[in-house]
Amino acid sequence: MRALKDQMKKMNPFISTKTLSISLVGPEDDSAPRLWRIRTPKASKQGQPRKEITKISDSKLRSMYEVEGQVMESIHPGAEVILGRRLSSNEEVVVKTRDKSASFHGPADEREWRETTTTQLNMPKIENMCEYIAVYETRDKYYIVMERVKGMDLFEHLKQGQIRQEDARQILFQMLQALEEMHACGRIHKDLKLENVVVNLPSPRMCSVSSNGFTTSAQVKLIDFDTAQDWETTSPKAKVVVGTAGYIAPEAYSGDYSPASDNYGVGVIMYKLLTGRFPTRREIFDSLPGENWVGSPAMKRIQDRLTSERVDFTQPPLDQLPDARDLVKKLLASDASERPSAAGALRHPWFQHADSRRHGSRSASSKSTTAGSSSASHGECRESSSSWITVPQWHSEAESTSLPGELA
Image (cartoon, rainbow, N blue to C red):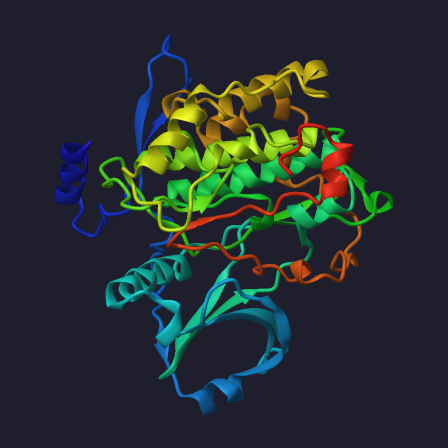
């Protein structure tokens, strides 16, 4: 792999091998030959200058954006998520602020955050991902300006009731589309969970029927890229385990993050959307703050438990949906090498009637409004920590009573 990248670099010195994506093309079984495909990062668009974090005065920033109100209280010290409006275009945006003195553990932590944030700022526009519009730096703070995403996150949707199977399938399809493009750019998310998937899901009366017969109005955006990072096959192991308990892939507990780890998170979300339960028991995840360093007894203990955990793939409606059962079982495989890629999962038979690449399943109404009025309806409003494992938001006691076996 390294030799192949070195050869490509000699052929074209303008190719960045840091995020060069080399993937296999062809059937994902061992019975057929597979070809190497080399893709330069889509983020390096020809003719477009690279965006950087822009230094600016507080007064200049106030002349460009108007603050309209707080989306939610941040879980991070020194951080805040607020609604805003760009005065030049009257465009509504979401702004995440980070206080320099309180948001970072030290200079190295701040440098790493600047690097990954700059990379995310230069990502190509991906339809199913929340877009970073600009990042500003004043004397005391950073301001990350993002598109305002319509809808509520999946956690909020599930609090209101179970999601239809047709909508769940479309949501998962669009999630995988976003990951396929993100992974092709040499990036991984590292914290996929219900709270980081925003879905605009208007009333069923607003659904449209696509040309392939699939009926849904779901429109999906992945959010929260605080833990996202560049990845290639030679990337070193992580030193700390980050993400949200219950969604973290087994191999990540030993520092091995990859696109397959993201796909495991998709499997957890798929299982939850279809069955109303999480695939693993809550008591597996018993680490304490500060124990998430790779190699700690707590991380090894949880990894061993996850690897030996037996997921019940006969839970209704999986017992009646063989294609869905097959896909979620593959996504939740303990061995990362046995999980399909995002592109491979999109070709799975369960999606054969839900090919929304042509977006025929979009709502016919162009007047759909933001679903709900909670803070989660404003897009990039759930945050994950780059320094510790987040405790997931389990369902309320009443909900867990109605769903036996729920991670409550």
